[in-house]
Image (cartoon, rainbow, N blue to C red; front, side, top):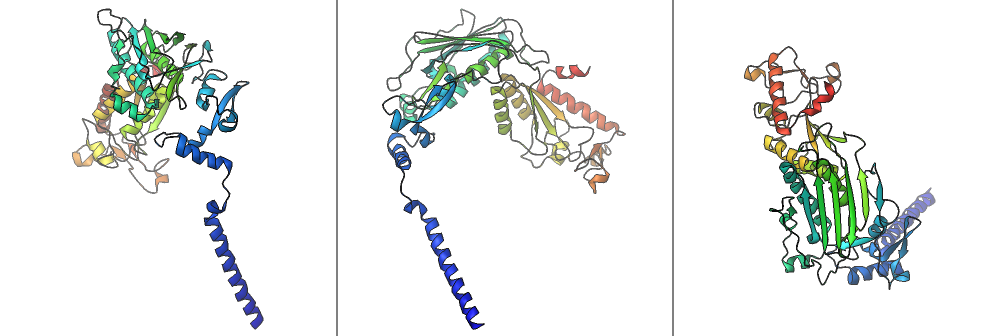
Length: 444
């Protein structure tokens, strides 16, 4: 028995020692491991070739790509192509294989394999339309388009700082079709000595000729065609659309023909293309529930921006539910006072108006929803204190399975006339904020 106890102590001691040794090796494995060729090269690229300010994966700089059978094949840049210009993956993928447009166009598509470099300062636009309001709305859409291009233009910060360039939206003036009010682009080259580019001018000519609509409707014609041609050091992009919303979709397609080349440190655009497109579905929507989980106005705008890039055109704003009532009504602020998660997690009328305009410029219609007659719990419990009776029944009752299909419970009171009066004013208020009401037409 004594021998067994001694052996046990010995085994425990050996186990402790081995555990310690394994831990030492584990924590020092990077030091003990021989440095591979690739890790040494990555370290060289990181310290010598790539400035710290560049927002790019360092390891990607070690590869170049070429198009083989409509596929981009990766090859090691140092060992095979060091004396050739490196081709980034994005530049290869955009010019290799079929068109890279989303959603896939429904009409004819032709796209060249040559791309050209440019700066956002090279871009100008001219709109031809008999409708003044359409022209003004397209100006705003073009400002958004230019802001998005600048967001992917990743040239050196020192160049922007020391050259003192003005990157305001007015730098790319949208010229009108009125000769007396038209502005012409500067004929001097905008390319910079330290960043030579392929083209000096990229002119976007937009013709919106048929519909004066500035609000998206159920039957809006969103078709368009866009033609890109290059001549010498100039590219022209001609957009023809029947409505503003078709022209805006064309801008989204043009945006998808532009990318950032991290080797040249310049934007690139397809040099020759023709796209004829019309949405296959008139309603291309996304629903966001801001009652069960509050989303800030900034988060909603990011969602709308993503929708616009994918040519989605309806934003179903599920604003209220049993969980919360974040909309601050001008007529009945008590709903948000009793139903919002906090004083900061609310949507004012100014917020809604801001979101609606933000969406409209991006070709999106806002469809608000005040959930009823069920899913009306928190926020509807203030009626008795104001002499209006029970506006909603069974609010937060337990056990919930006895009173509703899902917690928390709450159903509008159909026997209280004040419930209908409140709903009438709520709907009228929201419809006034969000624009035309033609999305009711399918129910007629």
